[in-house]
Length: 99
Image (cartoon, rainbow, N blue to C red; front, side, top):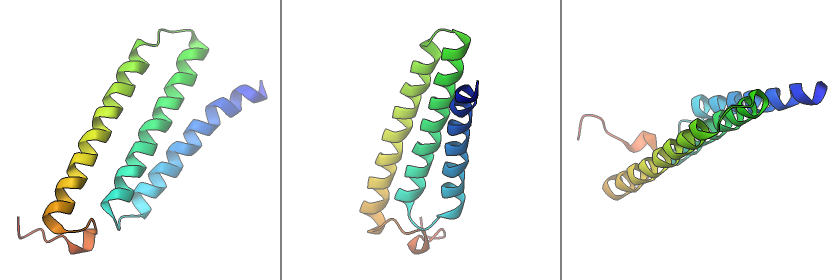
């Protein structure tokens, strides 16, 4: 029974670590995008643990993984666009008033 609680605790702990990295490190856009991907992967891990223990179908988990991959590709495209227009990904160098 103790090993089962570890399977539930580790994804939740990794989710909070990802949230802490997302809120705490807002210096570079790449760090923010990587922490968002980590949050998505920890949610995916938690969903897999829950569905395997409940004996459900894995269709929803694969759909979620597809959406997470699309979100990662969109984030990388945004990062490339920002680096091309501004020269770097520092949040301090962005000027909101100048589109």
